[in-house]
Length: 427
Image 1 (cartoon, rainbow, N blue to C red):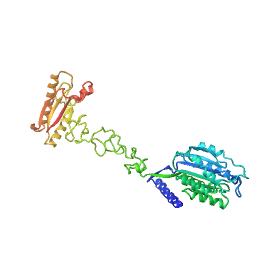
Image 2 (image 1 turned 60 degrees about the horizontal axis):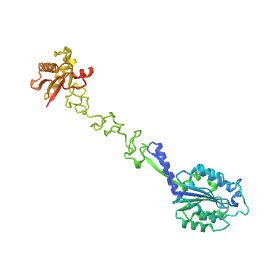
Image 3 (image 1 turned 120 degrees about the horizontal axis):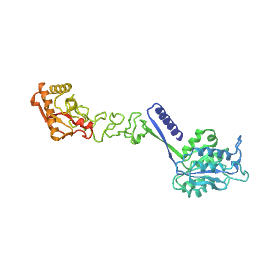
Image 4 (image 1 turned 45 degrees about the horizontal axis):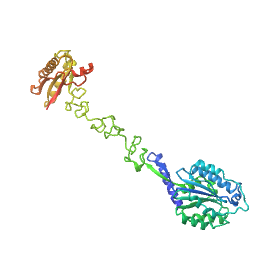
């Protein structure tokens, strides 16, 4: 069953990688711990210091080499770990929070040669003595990895010892790395792991095949959780509130395209990305301009300007006085006639429009003079429109002096904007 599951998982991961390369999906792997604690039980009985058949190193040396490589593969996911050696029973390191460097130092101290004759294998006692280590570990699932050749020949039956440990500690599991070169030793280790949900591996396979070693570490210590990011925006599907975001679009923490000005149009499509908060916008993210005069509605003080009219900065149908008249004069300049003819054309094209012709001045001079001059200028413009056949019932002229500025009178530029003639629609 485990082999089948692993094969399916591999196919699934391969498919994800292929899809990612094709640009359809991105997958991220997260390592989830399967256990809370672990103990590595290393057999240092006499048979472990014998060279294996045809080998050039002792079983103890082979076990040490495997542990060093395995230590590099164990992820630091908050485990509490220990390494126990027998016989005699002693704790090499731990229990302590696992970190790769400390455990590597302990593993390097393991002897590769030792006493052979008279150094029997009390495997059962070694298993039972793990109680002394477990009591100092926090509650949780504990994995025991036995590194032995299984040549038990002294003391308590290892199967009975394992059965007692699993009865006393329901969250314990036994796995083994077999250095057995005899059938009986291999059988004992296989029977031990059947008492729990552990896994087994042959030391020779772990030494020869890095993939097998990696798989063993994964089977014991962690599982891989694959999180998909179908639109490749950096936010996994489970957290992505906008799962179909186009490639390359910058998103927020919820996977939705950024909308910096909060107008409801994402930045990638927003042609006016700095719209003030609360302003109504069109589908391109630009403020609405109902009369199409180039001044957005939220700034437009004259929102019903007829099409084609020249407007000022606040959206009102306005002509600069300096373009119509000489300084302190109410006589229309010859070069101003094309501007007034534009007004005539608009009024002719829109016979329903009635306008108030408003004269405005800056604050220079007295209020009385400014009012008189603005009234005179408004009347002059009205006279011109009447001369072009515009119905007098559609026109009204009025001067406002300097009472309605559209800019500051403290600057020359502002005063020039305030000297104007506006045509305001009458409804």
